Structure formats: C-alpha cells, structure tokens
Length: 352
Image (cartoon, rainbow, N blue to C red; front, top):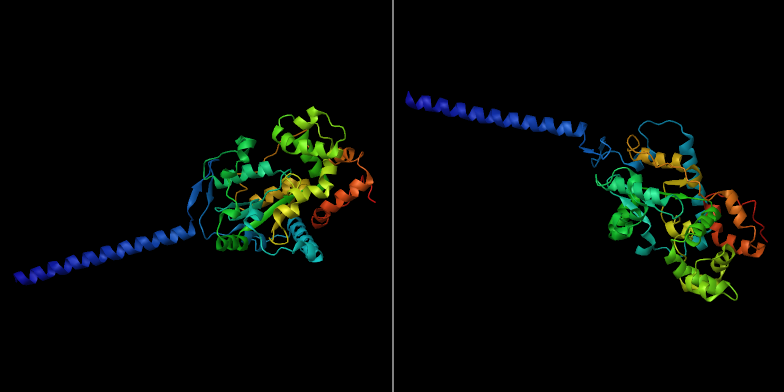
C-alpha cells in the first residue's frame, strides 16, 4: 500500500516535470516566431524605432527587387546612369582597365555603413560634407543626432567613419558584392571652380596656400614677389589651370582629392555603383538613397540656403580669361568625367 502510494507520487512528479518542460519549450517557440515577425528594433536619436536586424531586406535588394514595385522615373534615371557608366568603361577599356587590381589606397574614399549595408564613395565639392554627416548619424548608433549639428571639421576627421580599405580582402569582396554602393557627381568644371574658390580665395585655408599656392605661383607667375612666393595666398584661376595642365604636376604627385577626377577617386570601372546621384538633383537622389536604406521616415538629407554656391554662370565667368588652348588641355584631363556622367560640353568653352 505504502509502496503504491510512493509510486503514484513519483509518477505525479514526472508528469509535472514533463508538463513544465513542454510549457517552457512552447513559450520559447512563441518568442522565436514573434522575433521573426517583429524584428529587433533600435531607438534612433530622433526617437523613432528603425529595424536593424540582420536578415531584413537590404538596400541592394530593395533597389533591384522592390517590395512594392511601382514604375518610377527615378528608377529609370538611375538605370540610365548605370548604363552610361558601363558603356563609357567599355569604350575606354584601354584607359579605364589598365590597372585591374585595386590597392587599399584606391578604396580610402569608400565609406562603409555596416548597419544599413551601404558603401558611399565621397567626392569633395559634391555635398560630401553633408553626406559624411549623414553617414556619421547612420553609423553612430545613437552617438550623433541631427546631421547639421555635426561641425564640418568633425565630419572630415577620418576616424569618425570607417572606409573600405580598413577591411581584409575577403571582407572587401563580400561588401562590394552585397552592399548598396553609391556616389554623387557634379559638372566637372563647376566642381573645379568650386574647389579653386574654396581652397585659394579663402583666407583661412592657409595650409593649401602653403602647400599648393606657393608651388603654383613659383611655376606659373613670372616676376613673382617674395611675399607671394612665401604666402601663396593670391593664386589666380589662370595660374591654377596652368598648374593642372602642366605635365610635371602629375609626375610629381597625384592631384589633390578636391580637383582629382571622379573616375580616379571612385574607380567606377572597377566598382559597380548601384546609384549615381547628381549635384543637380541632390536632394531627390539623396532622399532616394535614404528611402532604400529604410531611414527616410526619420531622416532627410540636410537642406539650407547657401548664397555662395558655385553656379554654372559663375563658372563661365572664371573661364572667360582662359585661352582656348588651355581650355582644350583642361577638358582633355576631365573628359572621361564629362562623358561617363553624361555632362555636355559647356557652351562657354572655346575648344581648339
């Protein structure tokens, strides 16, 4: 009798243990499927939850296989731009593919956003300060708030953003294959004049005056004063152009990134860019990138009026005093950028 009672109690304990185990397993299964249906969320600095779960649709997937497909002129525009780049690379294969292996130095302009699986190639004088600010917010994981609250000089500190050359070769190849790659371009000569105005006509750019201004004046100006040779702060645009087309310039060192060609900075014949934005349609293209990244609901590309912006009319004025021979040589330097990104030859040019 006593033994039978003990057996009943033992079976009762076993049943309770089995029931508890089954219930626990059931709860775990429920939590698992909930996590699949409701991905992990991260609170943004703007107080809005965005999805950052690995395995959610990437910007690359959203671009080429959108969730809600609608015929869009924006999609057509970017496909046309991609086709133009590919066709130019094929037509100039002897020039564009002479170096088939990119070095780490070639990848230093490609900024990586791991959370949103994007790579941005920054081009100076094409809204790159604001794009770096945006990338700092996207990759900062709450460290940064409004992009426009980030000082411009902080946006250009290299340690604030991770670039592709900091990865191993397998990691580089993986990101080039699976991440959305984009860049922004601008009319080559408008960008060039913008660089000249910023680096050689602003008193605060003393480092550029010392490094480049003194060299330009020494080479291009006859009977230069000692003060000009010492300070390098009054470089004329004609002298700047003369320096660029001088064969000795590129033999000495590569162009500075502010006047280097986009072709040489971003290597579009080696890196397949999924989106090519233009300065002329900056906000439309930029916000399209943010929409693909899934952040458009809480972030817009910075906008602000800037009366000092270099325009096409202003660029034409700078070229008035440049001889047709110099214009032709300069155009040949930047010709690939004109053709690759579908910019017409400016009307103000007098080419030989």
